[in-house]
Length: 553
Image 1: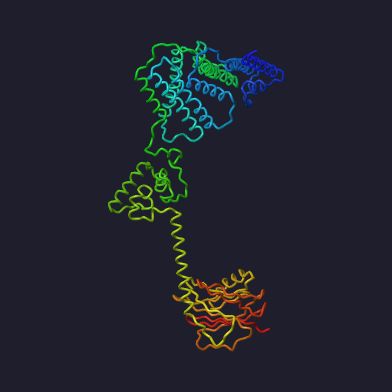
Image 2: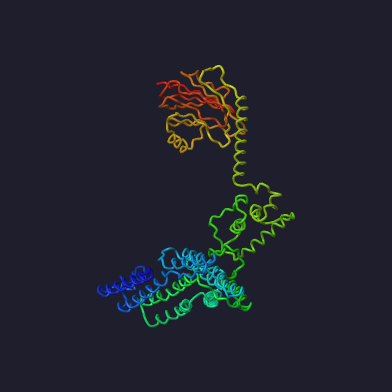
């Protein structure tokens, strides 16, 4: 037994068995799964059982007939097929397989796949058929593209929002034009097949039956209710699959040599106009990408104008529109772009403009770059320049600090110790410098000092001491000396203020923080190990002297 007969007989036997099973168990689910190939909805269970099973049995019979037709092998004719005809057969069978396989992909993805399969097949069909003039084939191709364009527009409208530039009148026109184009395309295809002569009368009758299916579906819809209409509609869709399969199978027949079938030039012109109507004009004066969101542009709420060097050329208009458009103003994109380019022209002529040059650089970088070359730099180049400037400033501070360090002198040279250092300190931000235990967490001590709002020159809490110097425009020379015993008594002569306080070092290491950009490193000031130390501060304008020694027990 041939494959097509075996498949059709087996399928119909399974369908008949599922219908009988449905009568026994009182449910149409088994027959529905066998014939419809997807789970039934709630409407199936709520519909009368006999009409539903009757419709499914009819669909099973039609599906069996479909398998009979689709799986039939082409008859050997000895007529070689050209390359275009061979590819057309492959694409037609691919369309059949794609329409037969249940798909759970998004509608837009299904539309794109169907478009990729059918449009090349339509183009090859216009090439393969004989007996039709060039104008007839062109009109056929244009009407086919109109029908496909309308389907794509509808799917975009289903998956997203309706295109903002479509008026209600245009939407109606689009639907009508799409339906008429699909009808005219199918008529022209059947005429071309009949004129070609290689397709049988049965194939042409099946093709004509595809026209009757929508009207028959409406008739059944008026006479039935529930899920019966769904099964009848599926049965009508089978005609289109059979027509595709028969068209592919009979491609290897010998075409009939007749005079070319021609159409008036006006028909081709109407097809071209219909294609333009299906695509549709812009309702407002907008750029092509601005219809994708309700506001016209897909700009972020916190939009920051990008630099022109960081923006691809094809994105600069959009970046400019996102930077200057306002949601509360109904201004078209072309008007905004036009105003921007007019501002560029005035800027090139030396006239004052209200727009920022950084924004105009997105529209006319060559004009703005003549007077503001820094605006043409990329973010990486700007960051590199800033890093170089920061490095230059740090080097300048280090150089000045070294010079200031060289000017500083020990204010008490007679009190010598091996553990001392002198450095310069710039108090630009009225921030103190400190002495602290190197291994202790002094954050709590710092909060205590700052919370006290102390205005003293020396503020100490636990293991932290802060020295506040008066704000000035020159450096303060700071000398710190670590002593093993108490120094001579207080010497106030020559100093504006002398203060003392105790500081604790649990680890036995007291360090001085790094002073500004100075490279001088101070020694450990806790020479007696862990314990309490006395800190004496001598201060006058531009000079601080710090003595650290163990406190008396």
